[in-house]
Length: 219
Image (tube, rainbow, N blue to C red; front, side, top):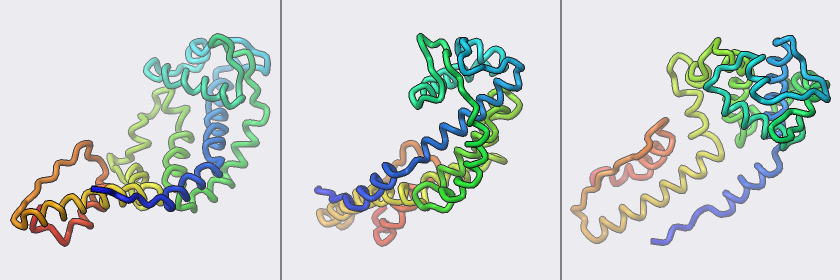
């Protein structure tokens, strides 16, 4: 079977992501929150301070299980030139604009929160970053932020009812439907069983089941 994906719709999504500076803003907020931990440790890093990621983790009392995540975050911040690393040693940590950027984000975030392409991601990542110091120090569980009251609702918004997820869920549905139709043309008495692997929020399933509803007698 030949499946024709919605190439123009996908291209529109790609162009929207390329124009977005949301990742840059997430990095700004991440740097601000990590700097808050450093300042709270009474060992503020100056613009020319030297130290390793492990030393930062120790002085900030970051739980051991988060060390790999912090190391990767520091490398990402170095790549975006918020800090400078040499052989995993921090040789520049300049946070003089971090607080101003944090306040600017409080205004800019509402723009992203109202955008069909980024609203779900903006809400989830912002909540996680706001709680980041408490998460890293073990005062709150990351899962309590991502799944408040054990509800998947906050995460579910990433997988449905937003422009990106809806587009690709449609692609999956449009791929499944002709397969079923072909089988029924060959044998109208066919009954198929569908096994979903990696079930989570049912975002994709809802789209697929809606497309298969006219053929529910065969599923």
